[in-house]
Length: 58
Image 1 (cartoon, helix red, strand yellow):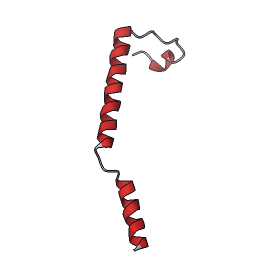
Image 2: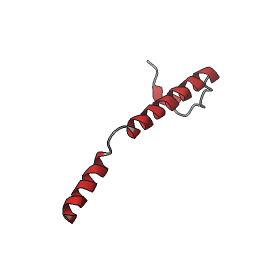
Image 3: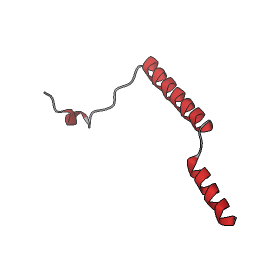
Image 4: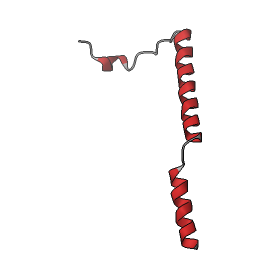
């Protein structure tokens, strides 16, 4: 079995354009889904902070 650490100092290989575009598209879709989930979910830290401030004021 070849030592994989010997490949660290080797120059990087070029990635095929279609593979690179597929990966970038998948990353963009994952980012979009995360942002949509954040938009439609509760920000629990903000809610807890607001409730505790309101209780202190009353």
